[in-house]
Amino acid sequence: MKFIVKIGAYIVLLVSIACASSKNQATPEEIAALDRMISDQQFKIEANWAQPMASQGLNSIANAGLLPFGSTASRIDISGTGGYLRMVGDSVKADLPFFGERQMGGYYHPDKAGIKFEGIPKDLSFSSNKKDTGKTMRFTISQESENFQVIAQLYPSGQARLAVSSSHRTNIWYQGHLSEYKKDEE
Image (cartoon, rainbow, N blue to C red; front, side, top):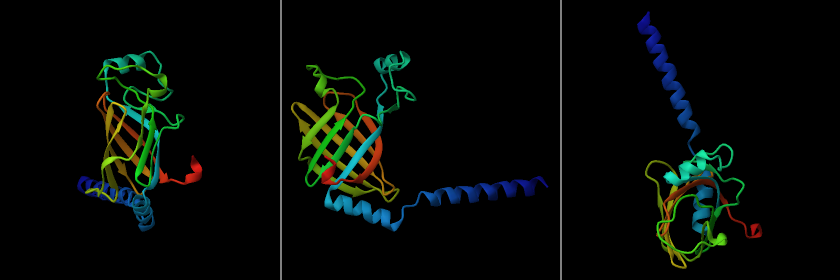
């Protein structure tokens, strides 16, 4: 009897895993929309979450209760900040809030506290992800004396994940929504 119950439990588990994984499959329309955004180079990523590199300073800020409600030192809700990265033609522009530490000296300017850059990226490439139907975008860009390396995972479901490495700051990751960029959004 125990054997039959175990077999039944395994079958239920197997069916539930199979059903859950089929929900994550992208439709052909979603894949085509992602491919079109990339080929036209017209898209925008609106950041909703920041995931800074853990540090003693950031943990102190979190312990003092200075982060937004529902946030932790390793995952900060930035949905109301308007943080974005967009690509229009051969140009990229980003204005993302930054949480972390500076690695090099320099002046502090309140208008430049976040990650901000604009221009034509160097070494821009798009490649297919090996594990899913998403795409990976990579590029480097400089703004004044700071250099950024950006890796973006773009998914047909409309999700995106950014990794930003800077020559002056600790690394930070962002999660957000990917959508087609329309010029009337400026």
